[in-house]
Image (cartoon, rainbow, N blue to C red; front, side, top):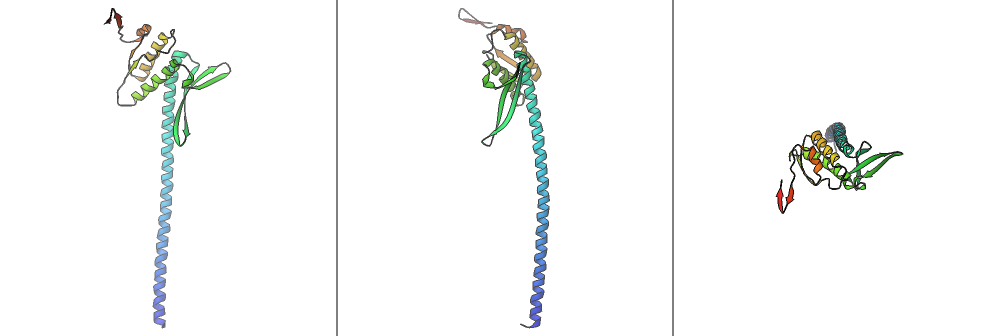
Length: 200
């Protein structure tokens, strides 16, 4: 190989190496920029997660307060409602608890650990808040929702329904066998069966 051919090959290799160096620098530059963008995306995701958590905690607190207020109308100031989030088998779970203050501390039980009256007291405000957040309107219809409450509590049930209706700004239409609840209704109809005929 003569010196001219050798020089041409060498110059060609030098140019090729310089081009490869530029390409490597461009790739490093892209990697660096993508790493920077990925960091920004991670920071944004963290901000979004924190906002979602803050919103969720705000909603949770609001729901707990409304249901606690409802429990206290019926059962006294020793009762409180709590919700806890957990993960089971990669699925989010929401556990509902009633906390009752006692002399030596507090008893915390899941909703099914109490009678039907307590379950009604919890489920009605929850249903109302779901309705309030949906497009179905501001009317809740209850059919004998408090059939499990003690016989000496209809006045408290009436107070509870009135208070929760006012708190959430919703109308409640309900049927009941407890005539004393009618005293708390804005409008009531007494329906009786007289000799096989329904009379109001």
